[in-house]
Structures are given as structure tokens and as C-alpha cells.
Image 1: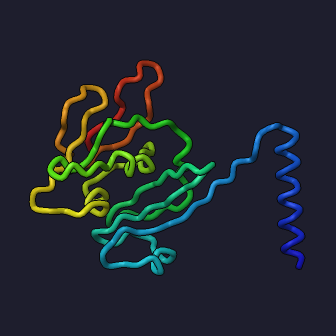
Image 2: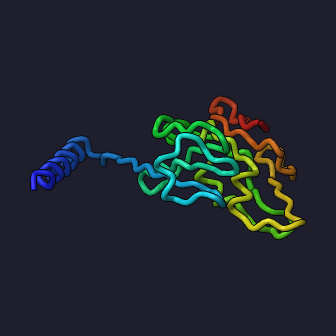
Image 3: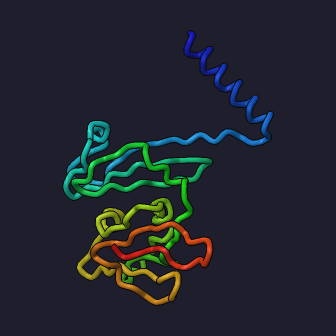
Length: 171
């Protein structure tokens, strides 16, 4: 019974602060999941390292927008430390996908555009069905040239507000 009273009080205080300052209080929700053929969601809470051939995803949601921190196989999992909303990323492409089948991954990649993330083939290959002729490419946002996706992935860097140039680097 007292927990309900505490929640009501908390909601009342949030509404009051929102009314005073004229802006809503933004809550961030964090959830975790793994992309892996060998592990399921029940095992995610106990993980301290990403299993081999897996991608651990820490998904933050704020005002209906989702952003994700990525951890790849054998990385140590550091939960809740890096707020993906802290910095504006430079998005290195205007289109990304499978050139052969014309599968467009541009929208699917938006939530992974977080400063410090590396977009690796491991992630992409978990998101699409792979065939013998799959060829992942992207259209470079600066040069508009087609670029074969590098084996080492692409690092997402902070947007350079002074000159708006590319801060994304191939890892």
C-alpha cells in the first residue's frame, strides 16, 4: 500500500515541477537484449561479457526515440554508463544496405548511430538474411560515392559543428 502512495507522490512532484518550469520531465528507459543464435533473452541479465558471435544491445528510450549502445563478442558489458543521447553523431551514410537484393538498412541503423559505437558486420548480418551474393555497401554522406562496407566496421564519431565535416572513421 505504501509503494502506491510513494508512486503517486512521485508523479505529483513530477507534474508540479513540469508545471513550474513549463517543460515535461524526460524519463529514460533502459532495456537489454542480445542478438545471438546460441543465447536467449533469459540469460541477458546475468551476462558480464558478450558471448562469442553475439551482439549485446543496451537500448535507451527517451521521448519515443530509441538509441543503443553496442557491445560485440567477448567485450565486457558496461551497463547504463554511456548515455547515447549525450552527443549528436555524424551519420556516415545516406543509404546503407545489401546492393544485390536492395535491402535498405538505413532506417534500421538509426538507433545505432551513437557516438562511440562501431557498426560492424556482425550487427548487420544479424539483421538481414545473408545469401552467397550479399554485398553490404553504403553511400558516403560526404562524397555520395558507393563504398563497400569495411570488414572492420565503421566508428560513429561526434558531429563536428564547426565545419560539418565527416567525423566518422573506418575502424
